[in-house]
Image 1 (tube, rainbow, N blue to C red):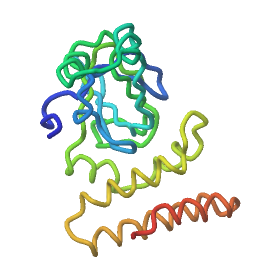
Image 2 (cartoon, rainbow, N blue to C red):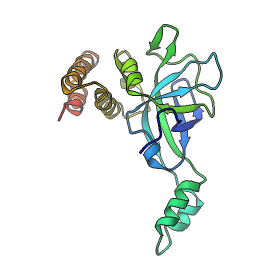
Image 3 (cartoon, rainbow, N blue to C red):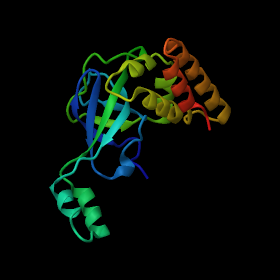
Length: 202
């Protein structure tokens, strides 16, 4: 099982207004999937909760891994110990898609970036629905040069559709999202076709 929703899945390592990276321990079951909506919970009052889409998870090596990959045999105990005590964190990269204001969720870049060591949480189903009930953030994703935008948006929409109660509501959500994508990409038919194929329900 992954971490409970009230427990952070990581903490901010570095941030800009457009994106942030978070570090986590190597128990991969705690790391959100590609396209998941996550939020940064600020440590201080007066700073906004920031919402974003996880677009990359990176597992760098460390000195112990370099030694272990050369060993003839590696026991399960050694693997578990290395994952629990590795000195290099799993790094998650997140594209900002909005923030929480007094009027509700605003789909624009936040007024200030996240701060180091702010907690990063997976959003609950209710939070995902609140963040994704309008599609104003699609343009932020599609226009970003730092992410695989079509793959990211498609994975995100398929995950978000699962927060709806039944297959009919899930299908209706994807159809509505597809219409907005068609409007935004009306002048880029190959890209539009690719994205619509990616979100088509199996």
